[in-house]
Image (tube, rainbow, N blue to C red; front, side, top):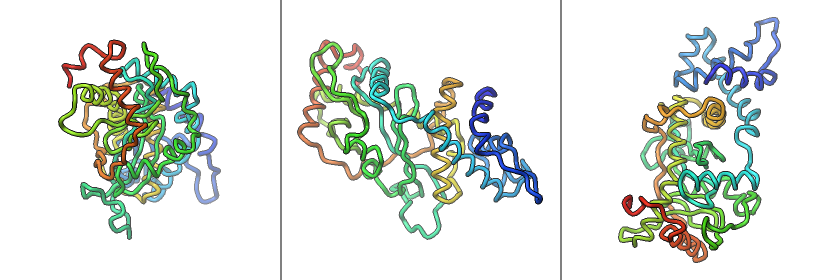
Length: 332
């Protein structure tokens, strides 16, 4: 994070982080609280390391980090992770068409496991299919590698589809309160299709969520569709990679209680968008393989006929003169 970005962030956090001095001790200033938290998140050091480096108690270090993480989420969420309007969704879709050649795309959705130390008395609730303990992170990313939506804190045992169906995103999709634009014609075509998110095989095919065709012996048309979908999906995968390599707290299991873990992940997602908006994109952030683990493709949701027709319409478009790209046949 650059110095101007730090100063701007501090100016927005100063008031809620400021505490009064007491007769027992002087309050820790907001500047130091923010530095302590950013050191913890960016370096991946332990609370014990903060205790030695800043000469504060370990419990005090934990209280500071959690307070700052909560304050960043509460103060910066509307600015860095706002609920998109109709116009914002259309702009996101334009980004995917321009960068990934995928039309009417509202964002790429995926779920990841965030490693944690086993919570006390939790049994196997947080143990995932890879036999380590985790909480779930469901995210939607745009074509600029920014997060549009995040949902944090599900049990590690949950599948991608369960994570999605238990999220507020699913609730808003089902209730029609997500402000999704009306269906629009595909570029260069008079075929009108809905706007939709793109996901992998673990997600259910629906009017507003597309997934690849399954199977091994697919036609060229279906293989082209899967390739084009994968190009759009990579933006959320790269976003996870940038997140975990910028904030190295994710390079080890989080060794705090589950609620604290959730605060850390939500804060880092806000800081991801904040830093990218002000300091740009550092390609080196994507060079290290992400340490967030993929969800398994279990518990796959059934496909309905209407959604299948929607996907077929896109598959036909991608092999038409209006929708094809020159290199697609060589990439499948």
